[in-house]
Length: 576
Ligand code: ATP
Ligand code: MG
Image 1 (spheres, helix red, strand yellow):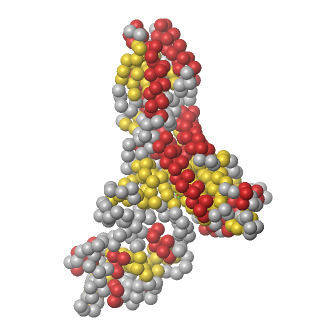
Image 2 (spheres, rainbow, N blue to C red):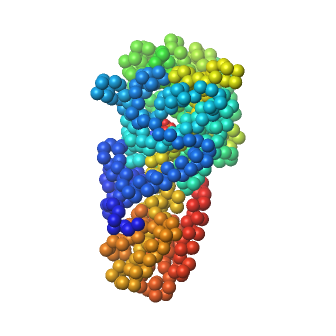
């Protein structure tokens, strides 16, 4: 491919709007351009990378026995009403009407459409199992689109759905997808971790996320240093500390003390000369059912995902000042659990306290010497806080660390949630009508492209793994004015293309320095330079983008050498 004929509008300066490295480099390399917030054009080079990711995904999905389909992006509201999600899905769902005034949406995901297809076409156990996937643009009107392709509004997703006669078969497919995903991310040259994920408030079944490790990641995960346990922080379980003495009876009854204008944990700790560990925070939440109080120790953070799951609710929002006053009789900062007439959910660390400080439900007052088990009418004690790096691994008791990651894949056991709602059934061997068991499996195809750059870059630009690079080889002639060099470079280019190498021939009338800079920016793994001097010696210079290692290859060995390197790098596994 001739560089001069391609649209590769590289930028010398860093675009001001880009916060993430991948966003900045994708813009600088002329791979993407923004059309509107979270909506991007893919230019020729960017599309080549995207297609490479798609290819890996497609090959591994097909190998695992899945079949490709393509479903419509525009979906009728009726299907979403049937599943109940037309009401539940918030503003992320882009809704509009067609010319007849029919409600529609632009698909953010396709459970409804695929379940509808399958309920029409599948009637017998003989037609199952089925594993169908597509690679398609989704639209989610994200509150905060950012980091370029990492959180777009329009983005390319691989979404797959499987259909089974029973739970055991669905689980076998889940395992096959788990394995396929591992192969996909390995082949993409990514450093990643598989984590246990929350399966949503209604879920109850299991779910795993695939996280590309990067300091810029929006997700936090707890990872054990000793065993292979890893979990999204939303889900990671807290093991109650073994050294916890348990609730010894506090000698005296609670007592109210005046704490004028002292509201936060830090202020209370300083004012009463106690540590945050001895303070209980009382958080008043509104839910779609009823308001509740959640008790958390002062040095801990509440985990709202765990709270939602325990309560079985979708909406959980902190009550406003007015509501807090109404429900507790006090201003925010002075709510407390003693005598509070609400369902009270206490974190297990709170229940283990012997004498704690809490709000007094009276403005400018706190209670001291509260013994939660004795003095609070606790509805339920549960694990309601977020783990910290100090918490032991729930599997082996080892030390954990907290890492940042970018979610690139998510697999999910759905059970009969959608088949029940949409009445997707089949007749079993005994002629009985049964709901179809389902699983769903997503991969952020465009997000992978950005995640690979977050992991692979340096000051000069991108460092693509061989499997995702827009071209495998860049061929740079030092001087095109030199007839011999020009001839040789052209014939090398032809020979490389003939041999099936993906080569970008930089035939631009630019100084070598400019070409080298662009080649580094584009992250092409192998750079071949030919000039009068090297050619006279019968050589070409080959440099590896990743290591900077440069060798002189005799011209007659150049092609086999490049083919060998490409093959080797395609099979390399990234070190975690
Ligand atoms: P997130 O928590 O990052 O919003 P999600 O849980 O909403 O992701 P899923 O519904 O599981 O995502 O979608 C499957 C995959 O699609 C995700 O694992 C992710 O890689 C990708 N994805 C989701 N939202 C976006 C987005 N706004 N931009 C790019 N990729 C996305
Ligand atoms: Mg999301």
